[in-house]
Image (cartoon, rainbow, N blue to C red; front, side, top):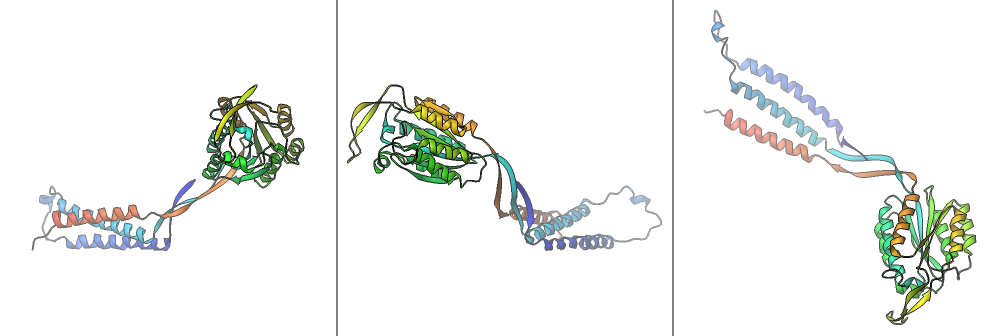
Length: 337
């Protein structure tokens, strides 16, 4: 970002030319004010130096000219501005497609799969300072939670809002194809060259009218990569039993971890992305870190800041100079009637 100085009334800078005639007048006045005396020779006065008070008079005049210059600059209203600048930064368009089906409450992740995914996704968003990011959630159907935006607080707040109430609001199931389809349609509105979907799920596609393979082919044709993440430990996972009326946990049971890894691998391979398997929250963090490094592209970003008044330093300088003038005038050069 390029900072520079400008004046609102630059034409008033011509007033600085007043310093020239004022300086000439001061020099002439100084010469005429010296007393004259005719002598046959001045050799007796050769070793006599000019009084320091004479020099202080010149110093006082110079300070007055500096004060005049400061006043003129203040009248010109100096302003500091940040001009438009363009720079290449790492940036891409990303849609997070997050599974919010009931099985995401399984406690093989701490405290559960959904909360672990929320924490990692929030950290991922915080680190992508130059990206447009959006969020799609899916269970038995899918919808856009947040359209693509650079507003990181909104994204993080929306991720943190994912809870059991949202699960109950949606039909249970796992509509992976619907999630990919909606994320793809959102990415088509983005301007970055690099576009990708990060799909996080713990199950198999069992809902929706769009097949995941069909949605993946559509994404591939639009130049969109899909990174798929299968979330869940191996074997069995503890699952809380929740009362739908109160939202309270009333017990626990175990469920088989059933992730269609072949389908997720196929989706990733079709679009040029990658498939990852996360069996705990630590591995999930590492996966997002890998995707963060993979998904980088250079985009041109323009920035501009507002113009601010910058007369304050000149006003302070004027005050200091006037104070010095007063001190010199009424102490060192004080005249006694």
